[in-house]
Length: 108
Image 1 (cartoon, one colour):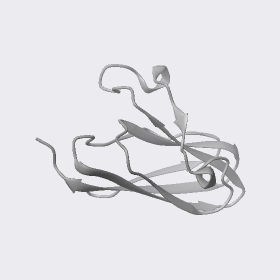
Image 2: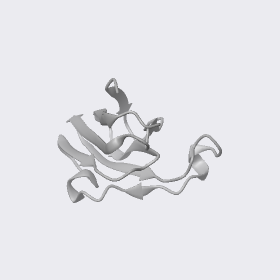
Image 3: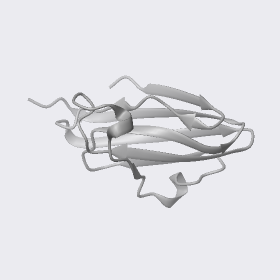
């Protein structure tokens, strides 16, 4: 997968990044670069966003506590399949640039 980069400045949510959950092994690296004053969280969903709006999906905070209410640059990963991930800026006026890169062989 070509790295996908999403940026959010101030409170709000990025567009979801959808992954190929048939890749073997499923592995997504996440890198967040924070500037300014900001608190952010990386979330994921198992819901198929091809069938529902992102606002109707069930979103879960990342299992890595460093990516929940983070205030500095952080990194993490997903090792089990998810459908999509997004960045939420909870508070502040800063900016977070998030890069997602998925590894693995393409599924059948």
